[in-house]
Figure 1: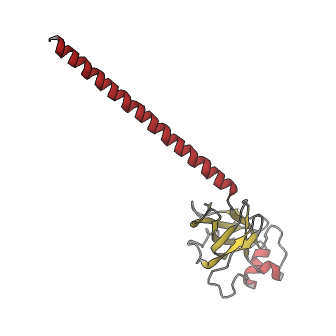
Figure 2 (figure 1 turned 120 degrees about the vertical axis):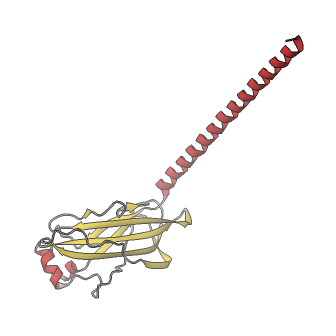
Figure 3 (figure 1 turned 45 degrees about the vertical axis):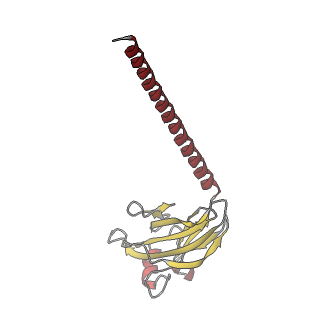
Length: 205
């Protein structure tokens, strides 16, 4: 190999090494940019979660822990949500249904599907710290009222109450993102309500 060929080979090797080095630098810069973008997104999401409204399940009545007998108040099944966030939300849908099952049957919840939604086209504003009741959307002729045949077993600790429902809402960070709170609960005599059901039937987004 003459002198010219040697220098040509050296130049080629140096050029390849420089090219590889440039690619490595570009790759590291691209990775750093990706990590920076992801970190910024995480920071933005964290700030959004701190400042946004959170409409969460607050209470289910009647209260079977402190049964009040067969009064009219005890007969109404109601579900309330409260805004635990720092900004207002606008409720777009809600709904719940319930069923009373004798403790002798020992059945799982009969509420296998989520209830029919009640649409609220204009939205109902719920300020921070304020609550809202879900609409009853079941098919019972008496609406959210327990029948006498249901009240007596419940108050006498011979039946359990199953309630399932949801609420959807928008927050101040956009009109296209719909937030959701879903619940599926069982109320037993002399016990507080507890979440039940398959995975996903109790969730908040």
